Image (tube, rainbow, N blue to C red):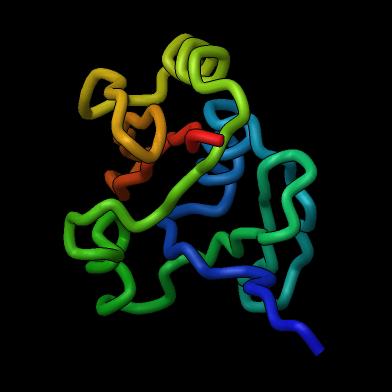
Length: 129
């Protein structure tokens, strides 16, 4: 049996603001939003057509709160690939996504770092063929 990463958790401050950001600003799909009791929800988003999903996990204690927006120690920790960098960069910028730098052309493709609503750093990248 082949393996693949099905999903990963991203610690967030609030379910609804995270859903709004990921679906509106980034254009992701809301795949699931199910109550789990005690105010907890199972919230899953993903780019349209993507196999790997993101579980938006609301911080449940003081330690988890400290990780919101700093899940990778300030490094780029998430990589959003695209088949049309200019289209997605323009659309994301128009929807208020904060890019930390201008797009740059590297040996491996076109890339720009952006920060999500909590400050987690992502690469938007169109890999070279």
